[in-house]
Image (cartoon, rainbow, N blue to C red; front, side, top):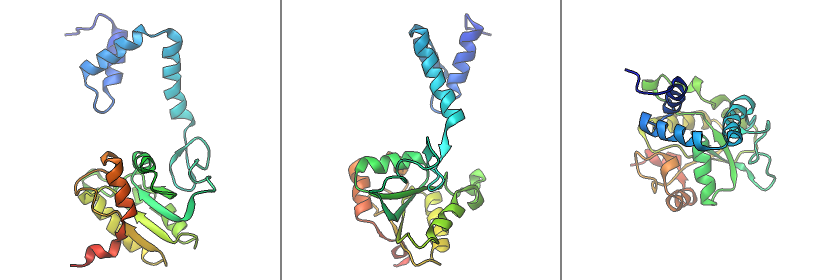
Length: 206
């Protein structure tokens, strides 16, 4: 039975509740809040998402979300271009940037290897990473993926791919607890994990 007094209201609630983590009750509260806003405010709200979807670009260097072909971080002359931090997505970039402890560049994989979810190496931005590693400019790569089984699997795969190059391969210290996603680590812990990073190959030593 349809409990909504308006089909328009029902459609708006259904669309809002399609977002992750938002149930029907929360969706209804948000939609009713938007109804109280001025029409121009709602129009700006809607337009911001339309522009995001239609105009967003991906950095040709690091694959990060950007407004231009090269993102602000990659175009920053003050960043250390010999140091690349490998992360899963933009949330991890934001988390690391908030620590103010890292001044190199990033490479966004766009996910991690997860056979259960049907995600393999060919689904990630690995070819672009190998191309950057082969340029001769990169001296160190930091594996900064989440400390999960999928993250460790991806780390090992990348380690084997990057071992052909004369590059130092390091990983975050275990200040980030096993099983934690990087984006949810607190800034102090994450910052220390970056500063106290260790060689990835040490993970194989007993």
